[in-house]
Image (tube, rainbow, N blue to C red; front, side, top):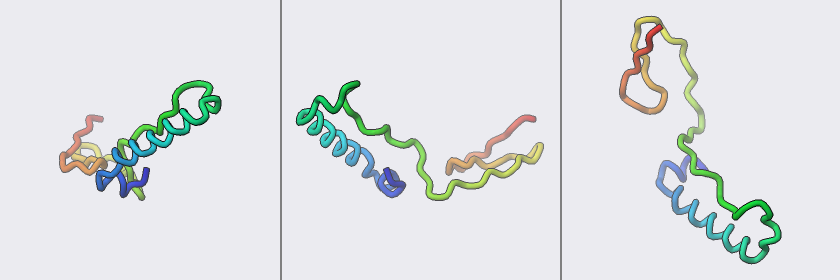
Length: 77
């Protein structure tokens, strides 16, 4: 799944389309799928082109979350 598909909300539609193709392949050639019914890979939770570089924590200073959250994260050392 591309980052663009996830960010624009196309991921669920693409997932359903992939499942439809896998269902058709299973019906046409069940002998190819010996372990279980095929399913597409799970949808990603987070997608990024370039992940932010982690910064070393400064003791006593609030750190910003790297998950695109405006909340401050406090760490106890």
